[in-house]
Length: 195
Image (cartoon, helix red, strand yellow):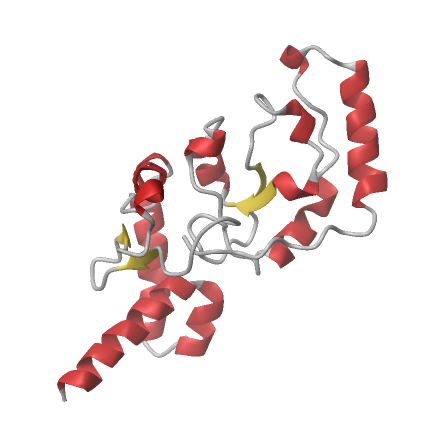
């Protein structure tokens, strides 16, 4: 994970999502009814705001889903709020479920809290994670399977291999898998210091 800046709210969001969504909630107060999807037409704005990277795995996500950081089940009042939406891979969004504030928010992270280890490509915490956030960060890695789940490792391996084979520059890798690019830079710096 790495920090993302909150994407700006699209101009028509209030008119096309917030207003009709809140009107729908007022007419359907029963939480068992779920919520009506007004947000999907704005997924591309969200993807652009996250540079087409999953907010959790921080890798290029060609399709992605709209993740309600605070779940619609527990926070119906936030279902139609732009500030509550994140761009995420579908399987990670499903893993997150209704955990809400129990996992770290991609919009509320410090710089370099996580890093990829080479050559294993595991995602680990760094000593920059504040002590009061460490347990939540560990839980996020475990629950969202970001450390070393096969799905995320295979994806990292593909990006790393493209770079190793010369099919993707370091600059290109920074756009598609920035944490792997950082790991490579760190490795290169360590090698140049040894010489």
